[in-house]
Length: 167
Image (cartoon, rainbow, N blue to C red; front, side):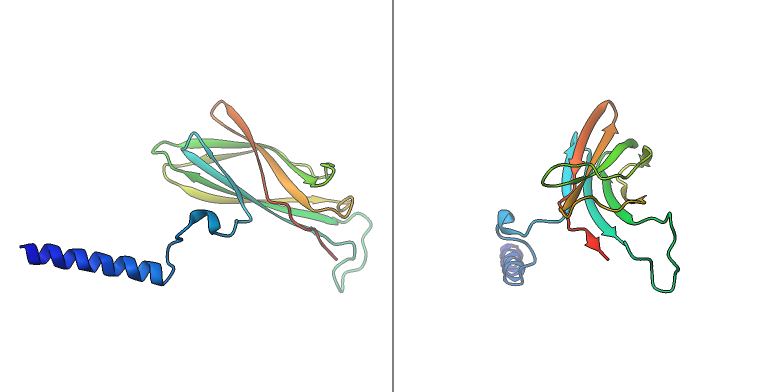
């Protein structure tokens, strides 16, 4: 009986050593590199993460003749939602703004509110494509600012600042 307990104890120490040796788990959480996503827990039931890709194409694609009124500025906002609750949750994305980091100048993208229904314990990634005819003003890095609502609570979350990929 005691031999089984001792054997189990040694096997657990062996597994712990393997995990630490192979670096499967971080030893110090704060020393890990930061993610390109911002995240926020709302009532500890819904987790929201946001990331942004931005691009400006002043020149038309190769082989396509120039058009007068084509889209030049592009922003793709990825919203990752995790419902940690055992109940359905409704998330309303009320607004998305793309702003310069240094002067907070608003870029000219428009967005219509979007309602997302999350089932219990559901994870979902929504990609929202924004375009404009003018491109990005300035040469600054940009970030997305999302205003969202869950229940009666309205909050904002920002993406990390990113460079505009210009062509």
